[in-house]
Length: 120
Image (cartoon, rainbow, N blue to C red; front, side, top):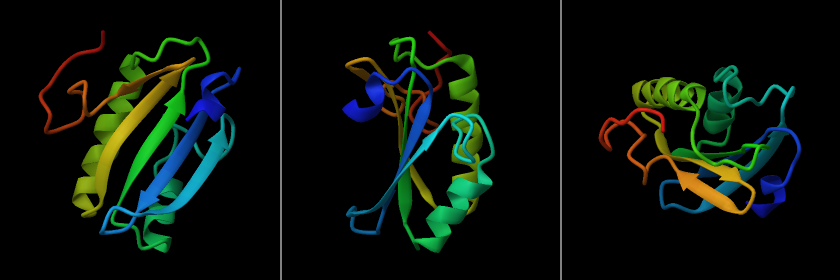
């Protein structure tokens, strides 16, 4: 997601997938839009249902260049994972881009079901 890695403000990309893992839709939102990493989850979940997607990946940047998840990122990811699970939608991953580096919250063990860790 190199197009958001060097931005001076926070952006979020939503990737929606069908049941066979094919990308169906990609939405990019900037800070201040209805799309927000720590904002309301309803618009994202509404897009998931409107597209009849099986699941999604979130990608957002840290303008500071440090891709490590903040405490707010971790809390938002946990809340969204709980909502997605209750609605039977797969939340595959939450990627954070900082400059040219990327942290996969799933790979790092921060996603529910992958082991509990605290913010670095």
